[in-house]
Length: 167
Image: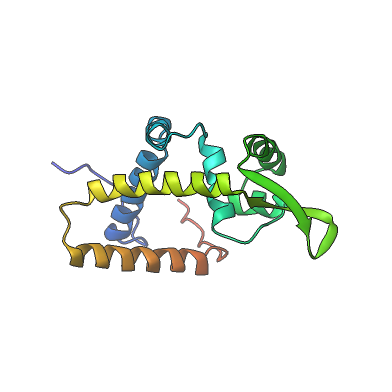
C-alpha cells in the first residue's frame, strides 16, 4: 500500500512525488558509507568536502577561494581549510589572479585532475550498473529531463517563493 501523503492544493501530486524522489536520491548518493565505498574503489583518501571542491574547480576556470565558497554555499573558512589540505596533498595549487595580482585563484594540478577523473569514473560505473536494465530511449529521456530540470532550477533559483497559506 502506498504511503499516505499530504498534498497542498497549490502543489500537484506529481511535483510532490518528484521532490520525494530527488530527496531520496540525494540522501542515497550523499551517504558517508557510499562516499567511502567510492573512494575505496577509486583508491583515493578524500572526504566528501574535498571531492566537492575538486569537482567544482574541475568544472570551471581557476577561481578565487571566496568564489568557490559562494558556489558551494559554505563559509570561506571551510574552503580555506580544505584547500590547505588539498594543496598539501598535491591536488591543487594557487596561482596569481590575472585580474588582481594581490589575489590568488585555485587550480587543479595533474594529480588533482587525475583524482577527479578517477572518482568520476567510479561514480559513472556505479550509475551505469544501476541503470543497466534501462533502454537507450529511457536513458536519453532521463538525461534530457535532468538537463531541463537543472536549467529550470538555475533559471528560478532567485525567484521568491509564494507564501504558505495561513490557518
